Image (cartoon, rainbow, N blue to C red; front, side, top):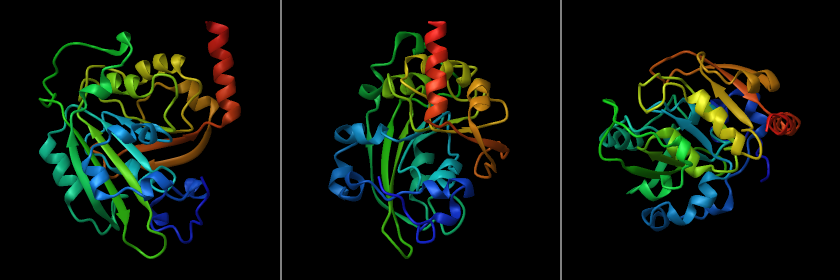
Length: 268
């Protein structure tokens, strides 16, 4: 995927400054999608949607990762079974002129879908039965595609929201390969079945062939080995989040991923 000049990038001013040199053009599959393609649902496109994706377990309506990484990431996957469907629809359809990464983009189209088949392949240890009073019922999925409206290239991004148990969905969508970017904001039992996302993600990573390239970490994360291995790109305030706190931005390069794999092999 070719790099995109940050000076001509339609949302370059929204990116975390340290990530601007990683900005790249919209992949062809996404650029060529039609509204009818979107209406057909995400199923035929899942191979592309999980490739180079940013994943946010327990996301709620926190759009800050879209602002922070739009242009570096073109596929955003938000997982949270505690957000009412009507709220997600309202958030995706409202007009934005400033602020989050959705600003200066128009909605190409969106569609509802059944997410159950997409989370059915989770490893058993990441399936946790039981109800949480925060859970929205029944589960649902919404897939939306946005296109830039400003000067310069018509860039796009995909936004997939799945109201499913976050860790189960992450395990099912990424059984062997890590997502390109991962946001960890701990909530206790504030949205899903696990008290700590960090612990389960770290266990899940033992099945992956590497680590995420980018980490956005809230102050209460427990992914310290990755944080210590990676390069700190600074902090960014998640102004769109209910937490409104600083999050660390960490980059894990290929050398770091090789170190991680060696450690896994030593402890196997």
